[in-house]
Length: 439
Image (cartoon, rainbow, N blue to C red; front, side, top):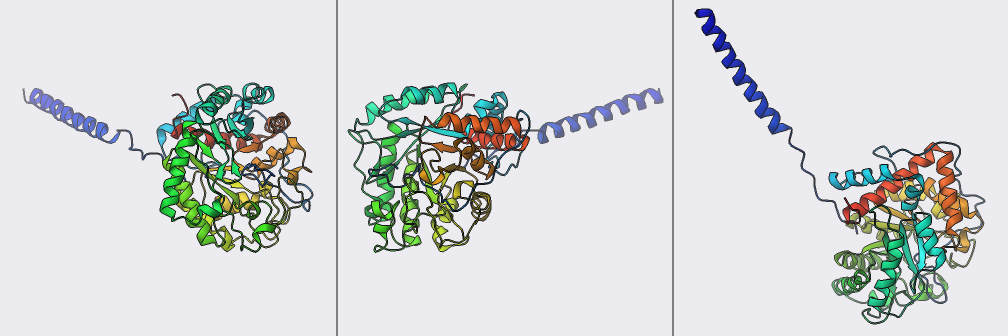
């Protein structure tokens, strides 16, 4: 009897302890809370100023480094890769990783690529590149005065060719104002040059930029390769500064003026749902040649911790999501490589000094005269090897050679394949955060 009582008493105690353990387990195994994804805060005029999508590099350096060697098919990238931002939102990161894991090598390369399509309507070559080569991002180039509705139809058509397994493209254009305004006509304001925008109060400019951004969004554009954050050192020098000052693309003649007004423009775009890409890091305001049409463009003044880098630093601190790298040569920063192929500029300065976690896009490296000495098949490889995220090509006829060069490099080098995966993942995470990926 006493043994039986002790027996039932022991069972009761065990049951109570078990209940407590279950409650504690349920309490502490709930999924962790996630913070919402942070929103990050982003040329072809006639006669060609260095377009936001195009600038150049010098003839001085013989070969950009970054040639890939042999290897295998890529695998999903490990966390913490140098070219990817740390995840800010678990659901979007998981969705991006799932999409990456299901993609072929060609599709992964395509996510790290942006290719042009005429703003007047996709041509056969752009359709081929977007659809058959799996390029996942579009740049609308040229000029159109057809207005919002007509351009929206063109954008929708081009974006449809770039759709990959539920992953929609980033669709970009150059809409700075003045000479650099690709989209015009009914529904689009005529935007003043940046030098005129710089005379407005920052709050007024931000309100204007929001309206201009809403017009782009209505046309289906979600990335604007603007604002220009290059500082031209003075009004007297501006006419000799072929890519920027000669076209009034600067907001002012001091880093402070450029920063205040460039950030106002960027914030307005963001408020409209359009991602701005600040350009052209580390600056084109001190050169005389236009990298789009001239080789050997060299900035022999700018140093690594230069005061003229301040507007870019301010933009990164403000949360810009995209940053474009200049094609010029900066021997006081890197004696070996042009801007888009420089590990010092991209990894050392952009990722390191500035702490930028977003998408690093090249200026145009297809048509730019500055990079013409580098074989087209090697340019995208060198940019990704330097730490870049997305290759920009404004000539759809050159794009296949560049794309195939990147695919071949990834097939031959496990290290390069991992860099492609990291770049593609960063792009996919940005797309997931914007709702551009079907779950």
